[in-house]
Length: 211
Image (cartoon, rainbow, N blue to C red; front, side):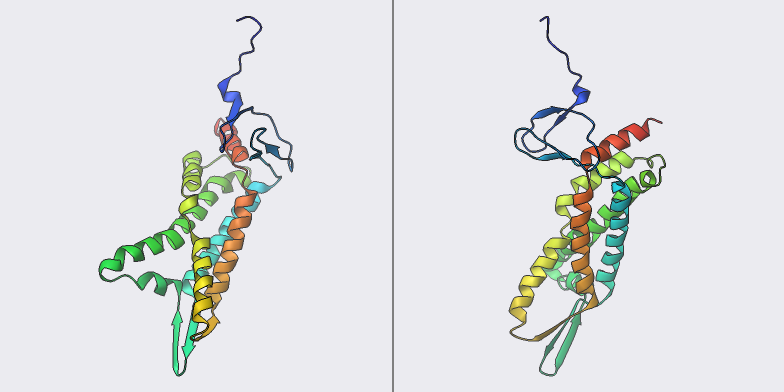
């Protein structure tokens, strides 16, 4: 029909919540573009965000190592004392029929979060330095986004906090360095995820991969 305007599908973006289509336009730094239907944030670019995300991911990775290596907490009841680390929690169910649970704990609270931090560093660090994206950076960033719901370090620390409330009435509990490292890890992860503007990252990956 005459008078109709043809829109290139490549110029459209869909809201991840309600699938409403929007024309892809440049969003100024420190501004926010929201879905006109449901209000979901579509883009919120920040200057230097990739550098900040990379540094936060590296910080989180260091905190993860500290959380695994150092003692998590110490329980004291009468003359008995027992120190436990995250590694001890993972190995606690490593025998018999509970072995799959031990693997799941290790996978969800240690391996997947650490792998996601490494993936973000690999995908974003070269661009933060002004270089071209690393090989397969788009695939690696997409993988990091897909595993995000399964990286459950923050769920673990919430579960520990609930358990400590119950254990505190039975024994004296002393929090170790790993507990504070894990708590800091959760805070750093939340800040990092808030800094990630996925639309901006994808567009930057696409633009810099052409050259």
